[in-house]
Length: 281
Image (cartoon, rainbow, N blue to C red; front, side, top):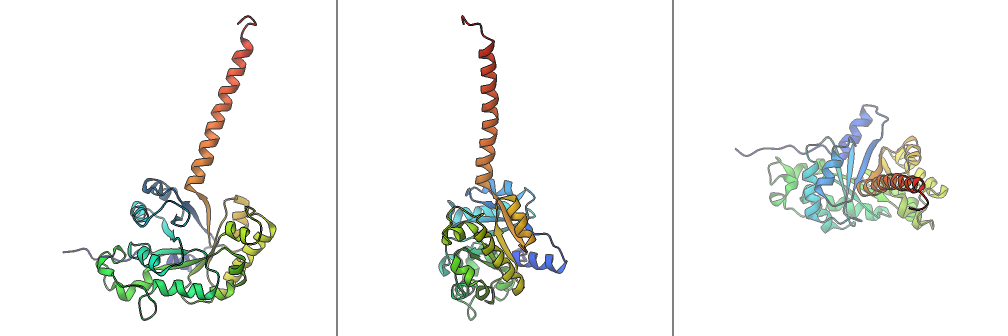
């Protein structure tokens, strides 16, 4: 007899459960940008609550994202996938390969938010193409009644990362089917004229405005914040999920620190040895 399977819990369900239980703790996440299933699995075992597998700014394809989803499956971590763009064809493909938690970048107004919602829903409520018998999303029709239940298997977040999106954040939050917003301070800073200045006071104020708007709308908001003090500030301001580091950044900074520590020690030892040599050496 073939297996009959139930869909995995989504990011939306996890946030709803935490809220129902009265938990004030934000879900702490790590970015997975390497494109490596091995690295994704290492990150999945870190103790983080969630991972963001990035297909916008990372060397990822449908195949590598699939491999990473398979690698982290079974770990107590929620994988979210950021798509390259708000495109109905791309959304269909990522959903079909089994990405349940989607983050759509550069959503600037309610119309774009509604387009994302339509792309994740089957007709008559949306435009998602029907191919469940061919798709890992339905486990090749081993999830009973997948077509009727598909909406409960999907969590949709949109990214607020421009000044225009901040101005329209209340309208975006009001769109039915948007489960959460995620604020990207890097692009937001650039759009505000502060390229590379995510810690600029005006950028922080814009982020906090979005967090307040989400609280008022009763929807969760997340944010990217690699500076610990800023991350804690945003959590105190109401962020329900936060990215605090990335695999490639952790590897880069940690390897630099380790190499520098031993290089300094070796150079110091060499200087001492030179000082002990006789002048005629």
